[in-house]
Length: 243
Figure: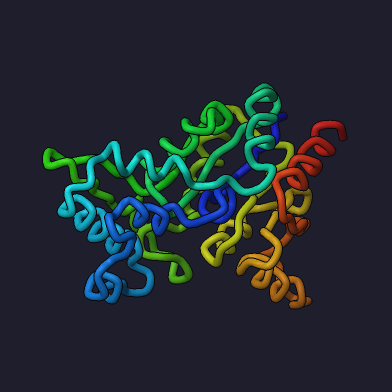
């Protein structure tokens, strides 16, 4: 039986937010206030569609956008961790569930040469239209009141695990690695011998601490191991493979 590693992307695999990093490709590296103020809570993907349209209107080419995106820094130890995963594919499956988009994630992973570590990416679909403007769509629709309208990571993980099970793949242990509030929902999919790994000092760690303090709460069964670098995640993964 394999292990499954599930990664968030922004502030987890990379040490910044890919959706805000892209603004660096603009000549003055800033958005007009009218565009910034158009964001509505829970509707980030729609906002990013307007951002990418604005970037296109400023005649920033897709190649220029890509060049900027490829400079986003990886979180400490992450490329070593992803390299280890790519070298142990017989034992480890790895997926990314992210509120970024397909183009950004593909560019960033390829630039670092670690794309072979990741089996599947679940994120908002993106493409360049005939005008050279990037268009971003919502990943799916769902009924979860806790998650942004475009993405419930729990629903994604449940469907993935169900499909894998139907294909005869069951996981000995799952590791969920993330940082944000939208990473809380999928942790309820984890079992007692699984591991949820929140980034130290970030929202997910604080939310999990509240859950752990509730004696009657059964939604969090997994062991919690906080991390600050990919090397700590790698140690957990190596220990699991040896056990």
